[in-house]
Length: 154
Length: 371
Image (tube, rainbow over all chains, first blue to last red; front, top):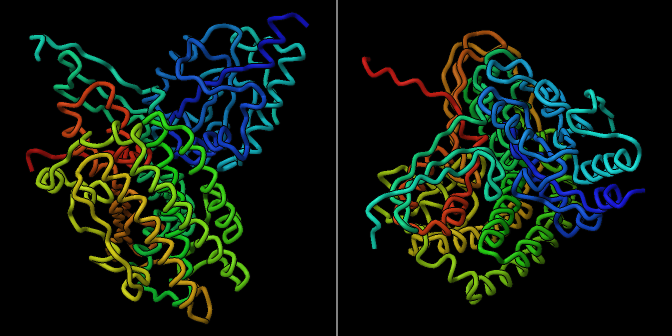
């Protein structure tokens, strides 16, 4: 295993972006970094800037207003980059799928690596999804725009 | 001191201080904010239109997904509105169970907020302590309803699940522990200089401004105005339960923190009283499928303030019009006013001070100027 790959798996930095979600997934996501669940033990750190992040965690259905911003944030992230769709809304659009101002799931706009369904998924499920992503990283997945939209369901 | 020219500072929609996408444009003169322009609508999903396309029972679950923090407040308001349309009398035991869940939700929402406030002030230890306690409340709510966040305990005509006596004892035992913890945290908040320096005198909202800008909830009560839907227009069983409306004269972010802490203690008292006086009987009455033409308004004191739902039925199984007015919309005008004259470094603190929930707020309003 190369040093770069080892570093990537041992300390993935996460950025969280809400694309029109109801806060349910967001708060469960924050709960995952608090003492009971504590994802920091996997070296995962929540990051403020997309330019420093490896993994983009998206919550919520993609609203028309937010689409451009999501793509911009995704483009700002350095390669290789990975996307985790957190919650049913981010996975498929959920109950808002047919709303007039909603595109649907995250994969209608940017490629997704891991889907975590649930409304909202429990912090345990989010940690499990991220652990799946780390497994994928230690394998052969290249991630980012070059991965040809290759996806893995948890 | 003025520098004569201003600089525009964009804030959001992706910003570490906010968990939700919302955009603010700040004009700053040196370090002082002189103008704030909010740009809302990033979370607009078209919920009100979606309401018109589903049946009343389906909409219950949609109402729950308007907001993931005060989900129970939204379903309480929804059931109250729809039961007003029918009209339908809810069994007293169901009313008490709804109330207990509502107060548990207030506890979790306020402890979440005080944690976030501590985090914004750079006091992460307290953030972790409060979120540890919050997990225990989430466990209780999961045990009662089966879910952590979207409880789905309310249904039209009652509640889906009963509270057993073992659960009641467990909740009461936890309330004693939680109250002691909150008192401990309050002692820390009142004496810790790192927190006081960031919050005392920051984000002043004068009582007159609070009223004229339609502030609601803890933001309004922290400006010394006694206003609470639970006391002013009692719904559920709040008319039968003795409790105090907490106010504070500080008008700043510190006052908003203390009001929320004291409300947590008050909520713990309400829960204990409600569990002791839990009426016997059934928990649900069957609702009709279709509803005759009627209009109804529901008002609920959500953790963030007054929440209003409006519904109009037309004789079918689907509402003709549904409207949601969330507390953050009321508080947004006041926070824009309080931000003027603030330092740039205080912006996240003041913005977080109203406990914004933009997913509740982003609705479409069309104003016909010619009418």
